[in-house]
Length: 124
View 1: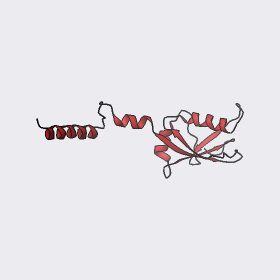
View 2: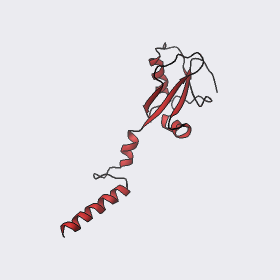
View 3: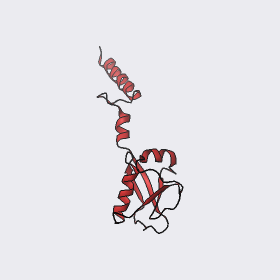
View 4: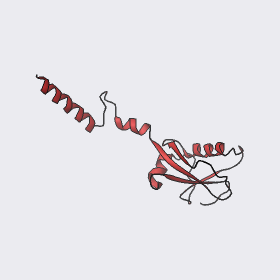
């Protein structure tokens, strides 16, 4: 087998692996991409909620909404017994075990998931 034939065989194998979404070790490249995906979220205060200095955050897509609620509580230095309500599209409160990626896929606006937070119940 000549050098030219070997190189063309190698390129053919590499192209086949790309089509199958596999790297040279046979691992799926799609899995590697989805494991590390992040989602942009925009946090907006509603009602009497304190305003956050930084409003846009990048979060792992596999985090539950409950994690974001706890994060906001810590950032705003709220008491443990204080409630915080989170709303999507100013209309409904997602359950704390809802995954961020699911909400992003359904309700993102211009590549950002907009979440409204407040101390008292506002919508829904």
